[in-house]
Amino acid sequence: MTSPEPARLELDCVIVGGGAAGLSAAVNMGRMRRDVLLVDERDRSLWQHEIHNYLGFPDGIPALEIRRLGWRHAAKYGVRLLLGHVATAARDGDLFRLRIERLPEGGAFPQGPGPSVPRDAEMARMFGEVPETGPLDVLARTVILAPGVFGHFPEFPGRNECVGRSLFWCIHCDGHESIDRVVGVVGHDDDAVQTALDLLVFTDRVTMVAGRPEGFDVPASRLADLAERGIATHPFAVAEFENRGGQMQALVLDDPSRTRIPVEQVYTVRRTRAANELARQLGLEMNEIGQIMVTSEQHTNVPGVFAAGDATNLHDHQISAAVHEGNQAACGANYYLYPAGK
Image 1: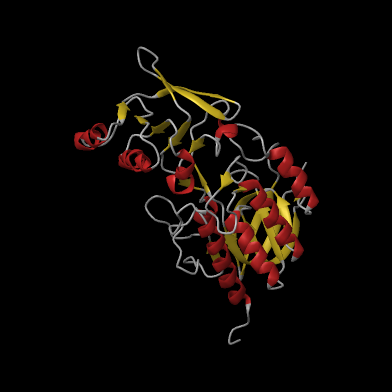
Image 2: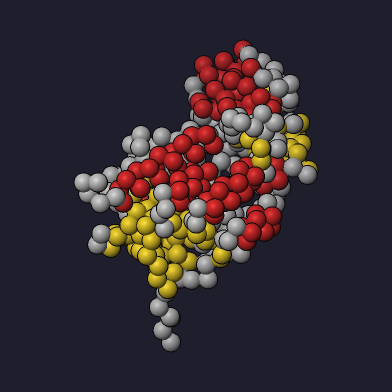
């Protein structure tokens, strides 16, 4: 029995990714009266994270609330919101063909639905997001990729509840919340060493754990820098990230004594991986670590394809940067759609 032919849709723009960059692009494309579809996988935007360094919110704002406001804003300008997975993307003459498939239950979380998914799904329905039961073939005159990254945090029971409450990775975003706290840094390279040293601006109670059996991958002089500043180091993997109700309790080391290091907060320092499979399919240029190469106006090397947010080479993993890049990508896509000479 042959499978049914997928439904088809033709649009001015398809935006892949429902984080800050994708929503910013959607709002600005919608305001230009473009026919826009935003495809969201409901994953990396759903941490229990509160943003404290975004202009205009002096008391902080939950990342989920930024997402809700972004949906409301995009829906106001007629952007269609679709829950699904863009499986393939390719040029089709002057257009781009994208195949959208159904998401697994709960979205794309590697550990299953996070704590914010039920509320997120309720809000999505309020603003007209529909799940794709697909497959759906979409033809678009432009594409904006804002798929984000994988790999901020290790996987362990209770992780999703801890992210943004007591589990962090960026001191620019969250260091101020570490003032006078007991902090553990998990990482083996020089970036991790520097993060531990930089945290001393906020607290003098910092401990560093390699987080892998091979120990640290830095010169002895860098470990000496840590010791000189009073930061203890442990060249072991973490056997258990002990936590309760979103609060980190301790790092249990995978050493002969199963050493338990009490902590109030943990920063994990590990290289992220851009979600770049669609970029590969479209033939986009990427750098040596897999980020999509873009200009300052978010153009890729393929005319009609733009990219924004953490998956690009310009990223610094800030909400403010993602919003700016999404806006820039929308400006580029909108001007691309105007007839030549106009």
